[in-house]
Length: 490
Image (cartoon, rainbow, N blue to C red; front, top):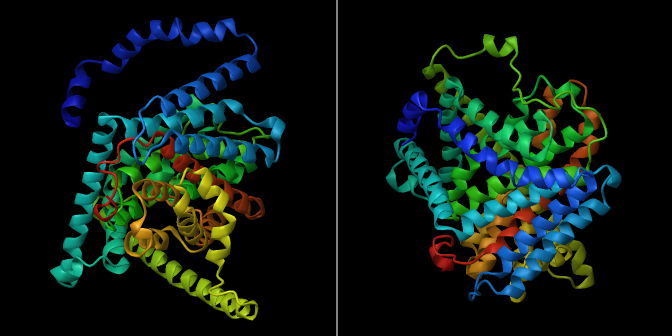
């Protein structure tokens, strides 16, 4: 279909034809409103009013179902409002907030959720994407079967399901890197967010790239700009990385049995959400060198090290995939080990006060109890969902997803709680990712280590909030969960 569409557009400029037909509609609607509201604050108020009206209509007009009561949707909507207010109240420069980006980002996040969770077309589109991801995972299992045997390749273990899929995906993607397809797609995505949300070119590129190529690789796309970025842009780059997961691990998590449509849509929703949240928490106060343009820099070093052919590109991708897979494995091993050590000390210490099983996850799960409530989680399951969120933040999202799929009582949650947890855990906001981000950005930023270190904890929390906002938005528009929930939760 895509090949035929490209052949047709060589002879018929369909995009220009569509824009020519849409221009009069735009002139007599949006442009007309823009002209009659000459003051900037009036336009912002009108935009905010339209956004709230669209969200409220979409939330409450749909009939209730057993897992989507209007009162639960109202709680999720209130949670979204609370998240925005808290980010603004804790902002470094509340008076410098770019409300255009915030309003546009929230509206875009909601429209994506509405498209995926309320329309047959949206479901079919993301179901097709997830189908391709599952097929890709199947090819990685063929490689595992060659190294071991068919029975081992089907084991739902991290070592045999997630890591091989990650390595194969990175190698596969490098073919498209060599052909320039990835760079082209990212630049088109980046231009869309640059035009609609009024962010700088560097921010648009990294935000659009993060769900596809990861927390470190997205920053490498603009490595030549890194020494000249503003502090707010550095904060945004880190926030984008923490708010979503990469395409490589996405394929692995689908292998655990999670809803692929929810994972893919959450990644896309996190792009505008991360931009909105970062501009609330850390507004721009400097002049960006990439303001007004979207360009992926290319240095002479890139040309020197460019693969000579597609086979070399695939080989280099396989080597990089091995490095990423091993890094993931060692990070998980070491972080889970150090957390277990801390938890053992806390449990021993809590025994003196008759507190059983005192752990970091337990303490954080109680602290996050209001967050679980504001997501719209069913009342009897709030603590279980916040325990998953706490585990994701303290350890990583894989451990939390594994608990959700394979450990009681988490794999016995209701349909609504399962979907909310799937969205709420879909991000790299954890302490392990802090180390990875510091290592990558300090290497390519050339002397910006102090600025990165001073903003990284803020970006970690902001990225986590952006992911939780996606869960709240999903809680607002949930209607029919057929196809979104694993079999044992249906």
